[in-house]
Image 1 (cartoon, rainbow, N blue to C red):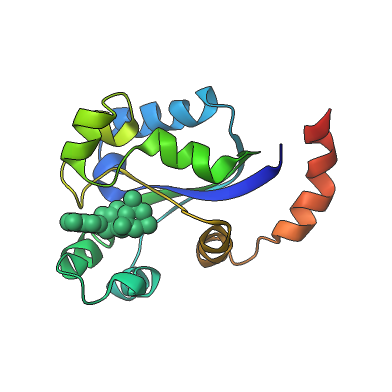
Image 2 (cartoon, helix red, strand yellow):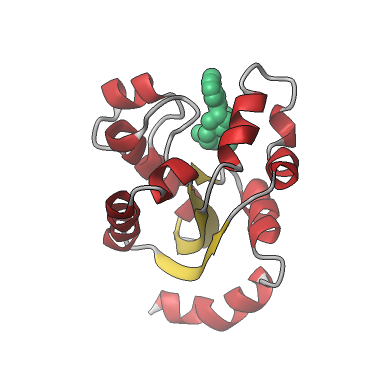
Length: 155
Ligand code: DAT
Ligand code: MG
């Protein structure tokens, strides 16, 4: 079992509803994630474009950029063994109808509104987790955190 960090974001559609925000926060705690850092923030259009530049040119890109800069968000650095996969599984599939039919108990299956307004983000690989943690928490040093905290996760 390897301790891993991932970036999780509660998107503007979910932060807009206080009860949903609370439910998602609780969901994190109920699933054995340790909250390493937490930050409430809002993006400019430019932040949004930069974060999602890999999707520039896709038909949904403008919609995505507008949405992600439309209101406040909450970002977390989460720690757990296999954190990246566990958070992705908890979120469920990207597309709302797939989420509803194949993973109705997942976060997106329960709360997703559309393919764009789908409540949460999660890193999808070790590389993207590093990049995205750095994007949201430029002052955070993962190596330093691991050195200090990893031993206590073994016991
Ligand atoms: P994920 O968020 O599951 O990692 P992704 O990286 O493929 O999905 O896409 C990033 C975001 O872009 C996604 O959360 C919502 C939006 N998006 C993706 N595919 C879409 C589609 N077919 N229609 C509308 N929005 C889409
Ligand atoms: Mg993605």
